[in-house]
Amino acid sequence: MLANHLAIKEPSIEYKDKTLHYRVAKIVGEHVDYTLQEMMALALNRLSIVKDRYQIVSVDSYESQEGDVQLARQFMNNKVDRWSILFDELVRFSDGANKNIITIDENATHFPIAQLAPPASDDGKRREFLDSILHVAFLKNHVVLIQSPVLRTRELEKYITWLLKTAGLITIGSVMLTAELPKQQRDKIINNNTKKIKIGTPLVEELGNTPLDTARQMITSEVIRTNQVRVKPKGRGLDILKALLTESERENYGLTDDILSGDALDKGNINISIEVSYNYKAKKTSQSILNNISQALRHSHPDDVELTLDKIGKIKGDKLIISKKVKLKFINGIVEPEELYMKIREWLTEQIRLGELDAEIA
Image (cartoon, rainbow, N blue to C red; front, side, top):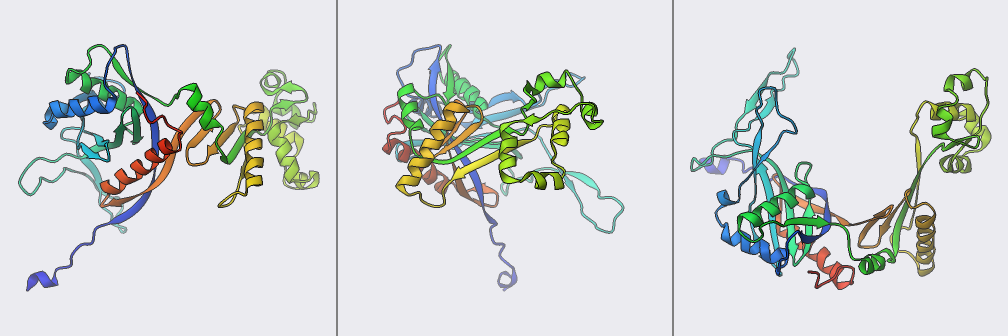
C-alpha cells in the first residue's frame, strides 16, 4: 500500500532552559476576601468563552505618522487544575499578521523575500501566528511564571487586573505581583546556605587618590600618553588583576598603569568579576566558610555582590530574587505541558515545605 511507503515525520523534540520566577500577589486599592487563585478561578468560569477574555492592547510603543496603532489580542487561554494549583497561559496574537520568509539559493545574487500567512486548519477555521506565550501558576497568593521577551510580569499584572474587573470581582483595585516578601520571611531566606558568590567591580575606580569621575574633569588620556602627567590607577578590580599577574607579566601584555589610566579616562567600562563556589556538594566546614564570605561581602560591598542561595534564588544588592532554572521539553516548538506543571509544582511545594514561602500567605 502507498501508506507503507510514506515516511512518517518524527516530532521535533528539544530541551530548553527556562527560568521560574516567584511573585506574591496583592490587591491594592480595594479590600477583597479571596486569594488571587480563587478570584482567577471565578473569573475564568464567568468568562468561559475565549472571546470574552480578549483584552485589546497596543503593540507599538509609539503611533505612526498616519496615527495608526498596531493592536493585539491577549487572553488567558487554557485553565488546568492540578494538585490544588491553577495553571494557565497568557497568549498574545495580532489579527492578520504574517511572517517574513526568505528563499535560500546559494547561487543567487540575492534571496527573494516574501510573506507567509498562517495556513487554515483542516476544518477551515482561521489561524493566527502567536506573538508570545507566558506560562503562569497560582497557589493561593503564590504566583510562579515563565516570562517571554514580550509578555513580562507587568503585562500579566495589567491583564489580570482587567480580567478581574471584567468579571466583576474588583472595581477600583489593581493586581500587584511583587517580589518583596515580609521582613521575617526575607531574613530567614537570606540566612540560608550560599551556593555561589559572584562579585563584580570596576577595574579602575581612582587615579591617584582622586575618584575617577573627578579625575576625568581634570586631565585627559592624551596628557598621560604624552607623559606630561603620571598617575597611579587604583581599584578593587585592579587589585584582583595584580594578584593574578606579576608586574613584568602586565608590562609584557601592555597592561601598564599608563594604559589602564588612559582607558579609564576615556570612559572605559572594564569590570572584573570573581566567583566563589564549590563543586557538587560542600562539606560542613566549606559551607560555613562560604556562608561567612557571603555575609562579609554582602555587608561590605552590597551593590557589587550577587549571591546564589541553595535551592531558592539569588540576592543582587538589596534585592531578593526567588527563581529557579529548569530544563523543559519542547515538542515541535511547544512546551510539554504536563512536565511544565510538574516542575512548577515540585519547586513551589519544596519552597513551602522548607518554610521559605509562607504556606498560608493571603
